[in-house]
Length: 94
View 1 (tube, rainbow, N blue to C red):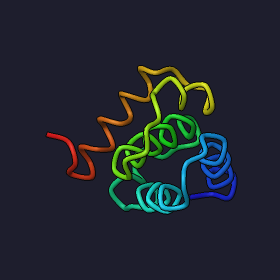
View 2: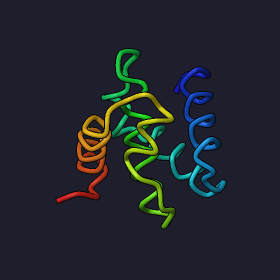
View 3: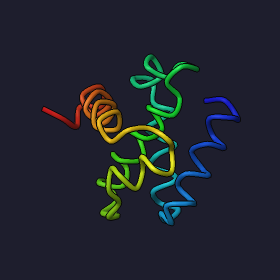
């Protein structure tokens, strides 16, 4: 993960008022070897949005796809697409 990507993730999580445990869980997902293959310069926002949604669910923090979409600057359908894609790679989704 680049410094730019880290700053983007940290900024979005802070703006969404998510706790530090969510920040750490999101960082873990984004640094996971299984998800690095889909992390490119073209889709940075998409991957970060998907990771935020996964970690918000895992840490029982209520945040909607719309809230994430507004903060990160992607569509709700993009968040869902990357949520499913990353969750499958991590073995969290059927």
